[in-house]
Image (cartoon, rainbow, N blue to C red; front, side):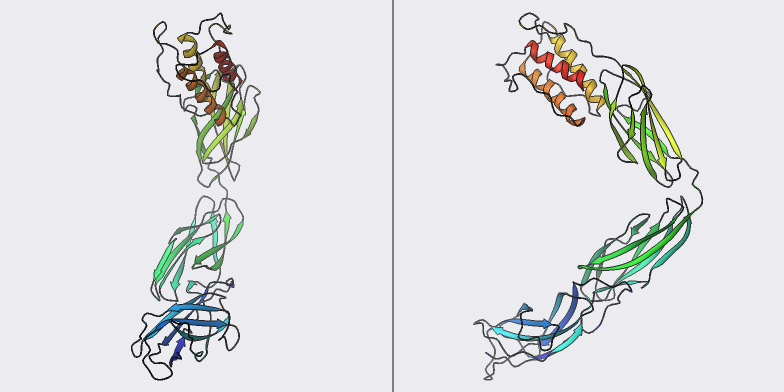
Length: 423
């Protein structure tokens, strides 16, 4: 089969290119042609399977190794049927030569068509075509600038906008532009956090291409508004009692410009440190001393304004009945288990966990039998506290206690008491 047909043309329109050069890759070209209707012997074409679209930087591109395969809409094209195809993954801004062949179901390929050429383009544009200066903006205030993204290639162009602080895209991202000429406005905001000039790239990304615009802005003035800070865990109250000697604090902070850091100190000589996070923060690994510990949390902004919140923690050693339990001598009682439960719940609160959901929440002395399930609960609840504190779980005697078969021994509760004291 040798089809008789003609190449109509390639899309020649070039997209609006940024003054910041677009990276190579993902450029496009639109090709269209009139489908063949007869074989070289003038017989009707009834077995057309596909087209091969050859392309390259040299003339002629056909035959060649770079090609797209386009399925034929029908094996018997009607007269004057136009076939269109978009070449993608090209180097934007580069000149390409394109030629097309037809292939039948037996793999016979026609001669190469006439060659057309065009420059691969990006299928969207961004206005303005230059960088944008937001000017001088007071600390604590903000300024907005609007960019317009337009579809220059037809079809649907979808993408998004990214940048870095103190700039942010606050509207128009992600975007989807359906049809040639469709537009979307993108609002970028500058909110300075220091009295200095900031510069960043605003990147508009769609269909694998990126158009960048440089943005600048200058923060001015002095920020005199202090942040706010609050402790929310293990309690929002100003006073807290615990039998644990390690504590994790959690809380929130805010500022009119931005919280830069949250720190903590312990009045009882338990050290100091920096919390992780800012507007939502966590201070872990706080070591308590026996007695009163005044924990002070301070939130800072970029202008060294600060605010404090305090929590007065009283740490008392754990005290247990029949301590230690003596093997073969001390009878394990419901009261012993309830004491360890209370100690573990205190430890869990200290590391930011809720009290455990215990099996048989209330153990009645002389009435409720102590079961292996109670032991499993104690170990699970304590292991979770160790994990929350970032420490390895304790090792236990009889680690695979089986309900109804493994009796709770003095050594089991002694281990749990020591582990609760040690966290």
